Image (cartoon, rainbow, N blue to C red; front, side, top):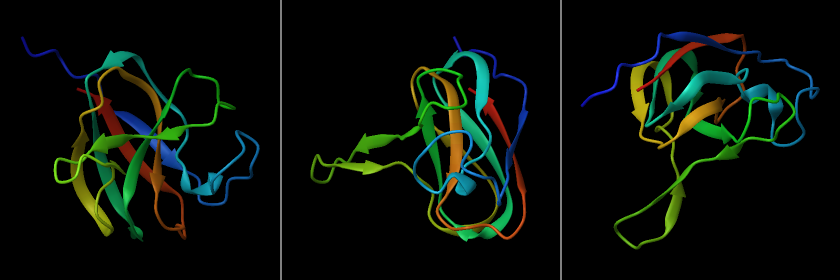
Length: 125
């Protein structure tokens, strides 16, 4: 049985956010925290026009804004090593789906600094 996707949620990347939410890796490349309300088996992301960069999903174990998110890895079939799950670098304008079992709280991350705020749309699938 296919479960019903969650409604689309707005997810804003504030390109000049100060490091007040959590410590770590380039906080102004992360979107605001998204809480889907319950776990899903994946997340679908609408990527707006962005400054060229890859987009990745970073998971959080809870919905506290000061929790440091961690990148999702997958096992490569070619050599059984792991690699970060992300899109190829581009200027956006597409939708992608990350198969991440049990995803509820996460942030999106752009692999390059942005020159303006960016509004992504996400939903659990």
